[in-house]
Image (cartoon, rainbow, N blue to C red):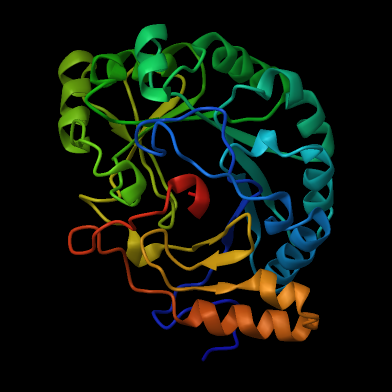
Length: 328
């Protein structure tokens, strides 16, 4: 096992950690959760703020420099700005972002920015109130839109929007892309990932290549933009736009070879890959009296086992797991 930073057997260095702070969510998106029957984890099963700070510090000491808060819906975790402040204070953290559904962002954006959050990514699958409610099973589009505006006004930018492409929201994809004309936002389109058996296999939407062609038929040839090799989205600019569109083709055009990401679930499980069961129970180590050196050693050994890539085409999704439990 290499001791040069936090690396795996394929020569990839891990720089990004997605930190789930809760499994709870106030929406029930069709591609993420079942309509009913979710059993939320008890409070004692979740890592405390002190445990989260300790384990994240261990990752940062090992070379991770980018943190992203996720859920579930992270803004449901009480006193989240307090946790943001502790993460922002860790020496070595260069980027601190959050992915949210935006329903509570209008009220919390100023406090999050003051605590040290740098960027916000908001899930927004439709600009039509009816179809938005259909995808999210009851969500209020206006709340999310006000959250986006509050995030921008608070300086949590550049703003990114994530839209999972499904048959339900296909009529809205061009309108979402058109948001980049008036604002310097990144609107990113994401293929449905067959991860959670809890929601079955959601119907795949328009392929990314077909969506790009549709945009070019409407607006002209898209301009390729520079993108980090490890970034999941391939970015393009529509002629005349201020912002950019991105395509995250996790299934059809895997970017696993340059992956630099790890995931920490709200229960303290280190998930080496979104689509693989292998991982490490860090909560047991934290609550079992492990020293910081033991904790870091266990993390490094686990990361060395990170698989080469996903196996969406060969591996059936977990029958129980929902994306909110994994910390996607």
